[in-house]
Length: 145
Image (tube, rainbow, N blue to C red):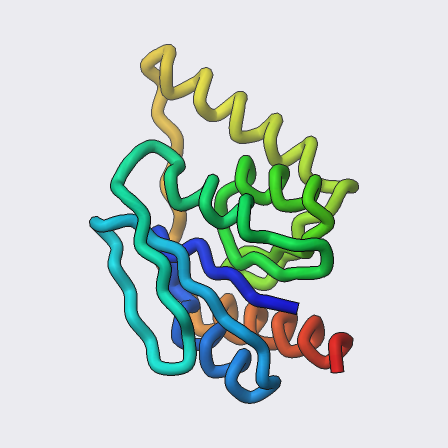
């Protein structure tokens, strides 16, 4: 199992790399030229800046049984089709059972914004969200021992 990080606005890069080192898993950070992130213990792949360029690179590198960390629903859907597991920065796992409703909520939110509506943005990140992520990632890595 390889662990891939969609580094665009990912608040848990450090925690992911740390756990990958602990479990001796290969960790790959995918980012574009505007979000370059380098961490000891992880390989960084930088792609040209462009709409979803990092996402497509990540999906094309994923193999069955790999794990991706992302908050992007579309990327999660593509990764699921490759047989990968996907979790977000709060520890929620994307599955075949929840991805359709998540994509639909994204579509509806976009329609609201495109028609001039406004939606409340995300609240400030909490320590509990990071703890939940670490717990879920540790659980997945334990399964792979």
